[in-house]
Image: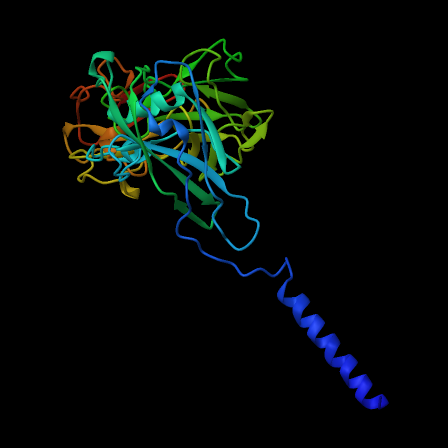
Amino acid sequence: MNKIIKTSLMLLGGIFVMAACSDDRDDNPTIKVPTAFKMETPAFVSSQVNLNNAAQFNLAWEKPDFGYFAKVNYTLEVSNTGKFTASLADEEADLDGKVVADYAEVPTIFPLNKATITNDDLALAVVQVGHWEKPEQLPATQKVYVRVKATLPNVASLHSNVVEFTVIPKYVKLPPKITDCYLTGSEYGWGGTWKPLTPVKDTTGKQGKGVPTFWMMAYFKDGEEFKFAPKPAWENDFGAANATITDHAGASPSDAGGNIKIGKAGWYLVVVTNNGESRTVSFEKPEVYLQGPTIGNWDCKKENMFTAPTTATGEFVSPAFVATDEVRMCVKLKDFNWWKSEFIVNKAGSIVYRGEGNDPEKITVTAGQRCYLNFSTGKGSYK
């Protein structure tokens, strides 16, 4: 064979091999965006399931095809109607109380395309979606609809088909709604004292809407450490290790063995949310505002703001009152009306927080006076 022709054929063959290898490379996949995947029909759907009997339920489904090996998180969603229009989280987040959940998530996240849940897991979801608070509210039988949500973090989520079956419900007492929040730490004898936070009105208790939210105005020392708990005891406590921490005020919080550690001393408005499963702690600027006739407007703006102290024992001082009238004051929290976090200095000179209580005591002050607040002692005055 001619040497030139032979060399040309060898070069062409090499090009074809390289092209084939390039097409099949694992590190250069064709990324797909699936819109559905199939959940297998479990054997137990063919008969009525009695949730009062101890049992485990095995579920499986195909993996969504993203075109490459993707680390997908799977959760099970349970509905009593099959509509899947609003989750329990949607209902909790609705401050107007208009959203009613029609499905709940089983809280376990499954890393593989299969799951095993207990009768109690399923019973709790059914009771939550039914909004049944007493055993006598349960029906004799209940249709149940289950589907799988597949989530590729920060990319996409999609749902499987729905599996339908009938159950005899089991009453499971719903977890109580969080109603309180306390702080303890290195300055409080680590449980020797539990300092209460104030609830944001209409977020706690049986009738509360949205996520239970609490606040406090506090001075923290440099290096001070602390944690929170829903009761004044070491139970379900949380700190840097199991809460989402945000800093909008320069507190420089850090994780100190699960405790929250302050990096810069000062006054901070601390806002805590806790729905029993997830928790947040936010450090905000220590801003206090006058409201209403004594400042001439109903707003949270600079001219309404108290001057903040620089020491732990210092006082917050209001602008001078512009009128002799009923005094109102507050801290302003994001997404809430100002009056949901208002307070007053009563006739006895104590700071009284509205919290979940009724309208605050009516206190009339004199034009030209100012309000002085000492959040460390819980006292205040008008002079």
